[in-house]
Length: 244
Image (cartoon, rainbow, N blue to C red):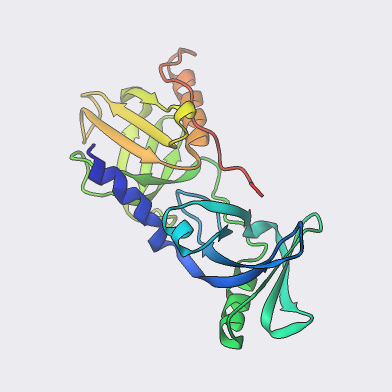
């Protein structure tokens, strides 16, 4: 894998944005209204559906987030009581509240509709299914966002949640090695296939996902059962945790 391939992964953010823009957001500690850049992301290999706050647009481009919350934790989205045209109030489970003011009434209406659409919606996949990003390689003709399914004896890769287009199917018994390094916090999961892995044969596939630890653990569990409780992988990465 060269640097260009990995650099391409950062661009995935541009494909999963539901809405973005500059607003004035109220500080929870001081109650001060400050200019911030907020982005509403759809679920992907980088995280669940969430609203992310950045200091400014440059912070967004450099992926330096200040905080975020999952949209499934949102209970209500309404207009600000003192600013019906431009303001939004978001209530979260546990009683927490986020407020911001938009540039104009049209922008506020658009934010309101998009946030209300995603509020409280679970984007959890069925058991054994995970969102990932397949890094370009010489072994497959597909790269990008994908769904990884880990069963009792196989690892399947699909282009999306419909599972209509299958990218690869790998027998766990033919996987030579699977690794991940939680210390580096890079969300990498590497799968090395042996020669008997048909049809792709001997190959290296690199995935990036905030669910790397979950993919690894499920794969490791299946591998242990198939190989008589003998592990041949190593430790995995941390899951995506809610940060404030």
